[in-house]
Image 1 (cartoon, rainbow, N blue to C red):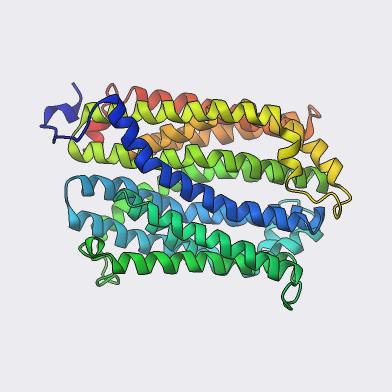
Image 2: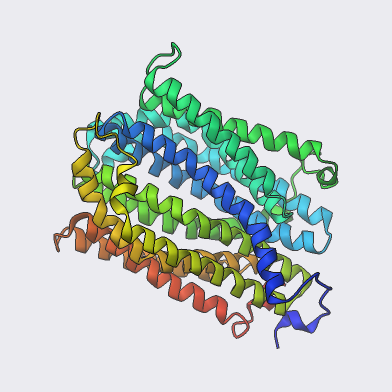
Length: 467
């Protein structure tokens, strides 16, 4: 018998399967909206920078990949807040929620201060990774502005975890949507020099990104301070006061989550670096294909966040049956979407890639589209496994099973995925398609291991460990 079943289970509103579906969608849809709105910012950047030309687009791919790697390392600690705060919230433990949020802010800001200098000196890093000098220099121009946005970005990540744990993700969605609108407007003004502003090109996109995330942060701070039912958590009261027990828990979980996230993000960053050695056209096509699948991936990613909250609340209630049904519900919903997304990627790759390029101004548009179409064909094939692995790791985080899933992810991506990608791309001569095939293999193995671990959670007594 599961350890959760050994204690009384508090009453739920509706423990039936339809009840679980409704609860998952009620929480998951706003979180999906947040992810899609956040991705809309990156997509508009890619589209509008792509209008400048293949060189600027390729440089922005390198810059955003490096920024995202740094961001992921920082926000593993924000992800650690979710299971801690959601479990505490399920038990009406106001102090437990407050401790998790406060130390989450401490942890992400500390990591941001440590890692931000890497963005300032990014040209040397990219050159050491065998990237072209002109692309490396242009990427550094972007990052020397964008690094200022790292700090509000990690603060927003903690707010997102805080409000998701309390099932209040709607405000995060609307704050992010307001950021999308601002980002599009500022890109139009600053990249191309409209309304009398100077045409700053790729640097204008960086300024727009910093302003956008700063606005989002400001909206969330005002909301958290203004809402009476949130003020009882007192997360801003004596924010400077340390809570070392909570900090140790955040650090313990955060490092493992960061490592797992970094393993996956690093897999795609390594793919960008390998394709960068093939030339500007392959890298530009790879960047567009990444944006397309990233938009698709936002839906299972949002559901993964919902899975963490639902699992964390089930643990807080000591509800073994609810945990099993919550996990099965979110897995089935996500897999249904993944199957539909795979069909779309198979059927209309040319319009999807072409929407990122202005054929009138980009002389390389046809070559970029031709190179990107087979990449999306491979991406369609790994939609199912990518969805499985992200949902499963979200569920495992919810029950605070962190270390072993991290090792599984690192092994799958770096001991298997990256070597296969390199071999297929260069010795086997498959180029970009070979790189993406390696991605698919790494993601497939990760999905198999992580999903199997969650489904066997009682056998491994993971619930007992999370109690």
